[in-house]
Image (cartoon, rainbow, N blue to C red; front, side):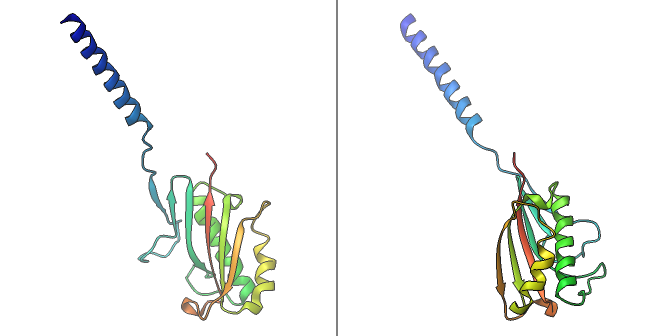
Length: 154
């Protein structure tokens, strides 16, 4: 009887320890937080950025001024879009050096050189990966739209 009770006690303690270890080893779900810097347009059906754990996803961004009006020319639109992306990235507690992937959508691929001249001034080495494509048309007849992903090392 004593032996049976001792065996049951040991089994109970072992089961509890295994259950505790299993519960502790399950990763918790990362927090999800919208990043909308001050001055961002309100009422949009999307967030400017979404921070999930240590990864920030930045929405496609056009090159507009503070009033939402498109800047003139590809260089000005590229600069304005990247400045807005920088605000979102900094709002997520990161820098442009944390960018790991960028997508550039051009209305006219002939603007590639002018876009690239401005673009390369925004990212330190190592530069993020990038995809650049020409699209049929952009919202508001913009010349460029840029999206990005940034990761903050743990």
